[in-house]
Image (cartoon, rainbow, N blue to C red; front, top):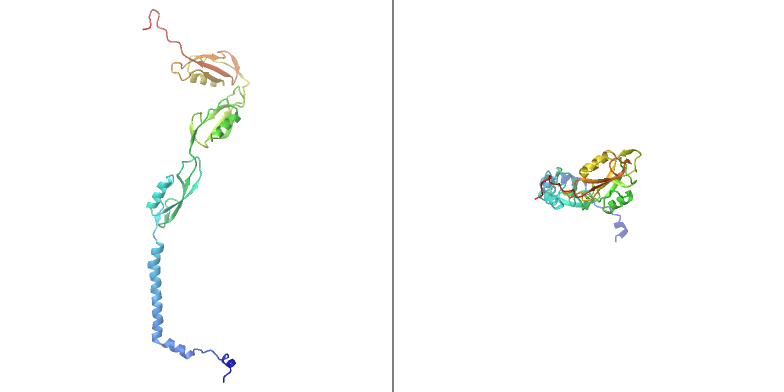
Length: 274
């Protein structure tokens, strides 16, 4: 009886070289290998030339339309009509109109594959407008506080070239009071450095319109304030002024001007009003 230990040491069966040569010389075997190779090549070319172009849409491209400054809905519609997909992201820009496209990627005119996502940045900033308040005559600190409370910015404060009797008070502002501006708008203020050292003679500005009177006084570096109903069409002229004409005052002194009802024209002597 054979020992089991002897079986485990028996050599594995090997294909003899003569048998392999017989396969390689067999025409049927070689024809089968050639057929398999041909089928593989045909399958590769069909997949590469027909299937892959359909899947990847190779060589098919569309231009990205320009949707900058459009409302988000309009931009999405324009991209959809072009065969593209809008993907939104938001950014706050207070000085620009709300809900408009402020950036797009890829840029307009780029050639991309149909179905490509186009990233649009839409502004969500608040575009509420505010009325610039009148701060003339106020201290710089109070004027700046009023501007900030309304959402306005005062980055620049300048000394006024024309003196004024009240130092460190606002003498000019830009934009002017009453102007409607977007929140976050910059406002420039000018402030008084006090009265000047030079004396000037107060001119006579009675009998002329307030705007003309102010202009004449400013030419002499004098300030003015108008009292009375300046918008009354029946009282467009300066009736009185203080100090009176001829007084000597320092540059920047404030001249008080009064307007009021003018006396009706008297009819010529001997004639009566109807």
